[in-house]
Image 1: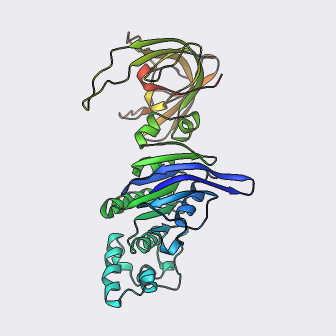
Image 2: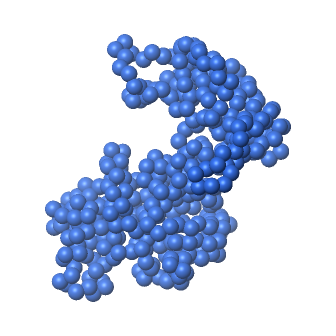
Image 3: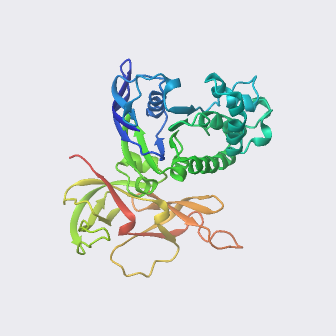
Length: 380
């Protein structure tokens, strides 16, 4: 699927602004962003329920915008299931086949195949009100897939489920995708959902696509401060570049060609002090940049680290707030001019006397220059 120059206005409100995306066949592609960012509007245009003001949508080199929803090579799974309450599970799944006048002798084996795919073969004669939320969503998925669309559109399909069931259904959805191999376009505001199952993610805000990339690229190399804050948790600071030094020689990757040079930049963060960060993007002395380091990259300890490495950023502070989550504790550490830095410590050992770091403890926090990231250069 190729989306070119898609824009949509509702009166004076710009819902989508010149969206351009190329989604590969068989890809699990997620549209991720906060409420009101335009992701559902985009999905509704792809499904044929809305018309854009400008742009085109191509499936197999055919512009599908003039084609009505029921004749497109796509089907939609809604967050509210949209099942027929008076029909059985079997008849809900078979409905579109009957509408298309598929021969009766072909309907039963096909419906049974798709009920087996979604693990509902023992529930064929139940009505929707006899099913759990997860089972209803599986019926909706089977009904959408039975027409064998080229693209399956999923509009926050798990949002009505509780947290544990949502995680279980997410795994099942990924398994279904792997089995049938068609393109999934998945709308969600949940970062963990998108990171867990997507081949690629488009992060959206205020009608714009801010970044497209793999989950690893989006998380480790965010393209803007918004992406860094929205995807997981992070420590984000504005800083001035005070020095830049090229380090190492370009290496030859396995595929051939020279790798870009790497730089060591020294940044001054107001109220915090000097920090070091490596970057492959050239920055200049005097520029103002956004710098980020994820909490799990930061080492927290009561003892001062013994390392002599020059690329380690080291600060002393006091625990302002520990948040215990069972498998980990998140610490808010107050450093210098009352700056709070978040650090995460995984619980890999058993402590029979409780946590080794608690509220108000004096601690050291440190991270490597390689674990920070310059998100963007700010405009002067």
